[in-house]
Length: 101
Image 1 (tube, helix red, strand yellow):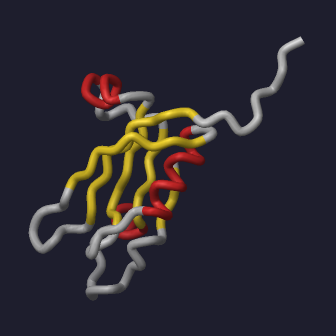
Image 2: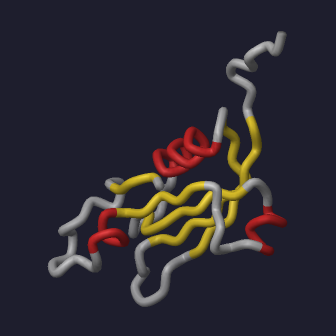
Image 3: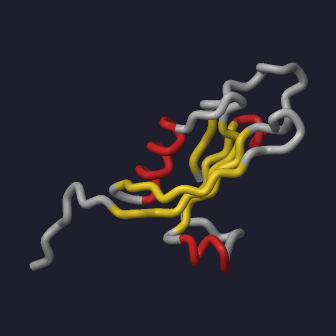
């Protein structure tokens, strides 16, 4: 009988872009731990610190996968601004609000 592994942390590779600051996004690449890819990505979003906020983040199995298949992440988190388009007024979207896909 197979035993269910509870609480085992896995390591993932995350590539994230901030909102433009002021003209170009800052890109960060980090190793991040989580029980699964969704847990790791949501934890990253919660802990992300940048003066302009998080625009998008992609999570991959590892850096090799991110390099070879950048368009195929395990999951993506997109801010509401990325989903619905650029805001008409500054501050219209909260940079912490978004969706995981």
